[in-house]
Length: 149
Image (cartoon, one colour):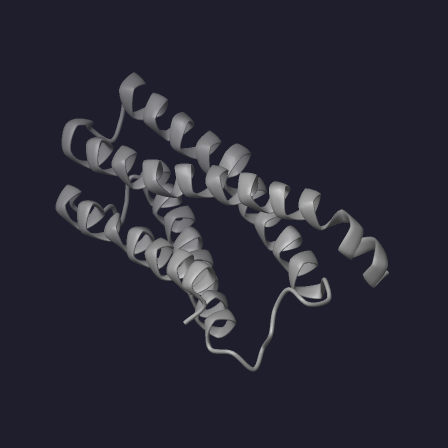
């Protein structure tokens, strides 16, 4: 099995990177949709329904499959011999940040449900601030992997 993973490493890494990019695109865009939805749209009518549909499809059709693929191919990378040395600090930083990013993803899913229900919606300012969370996590992940501090 480890020989297969070693041979497939370039493909596994490529699919992992593509998955991460897709996940991050959605994770950056969904809070921006929430900002506009909370500030410019009443919680009824065609525009509200359109925003709910866009937010739901982004979360369910793009973000969640991309997150799942990120995790699957990430685990395959971890299982590939010689890729991760758990005695170093960087894989632990990356793992913690990925877990936090997944928690943020789940929080976004709950917020999307709140918009559909028209209840528990936060302010546009709150969503703007929360939109910085994945940026900080992404910076920590990239630096930990590339610099291997």
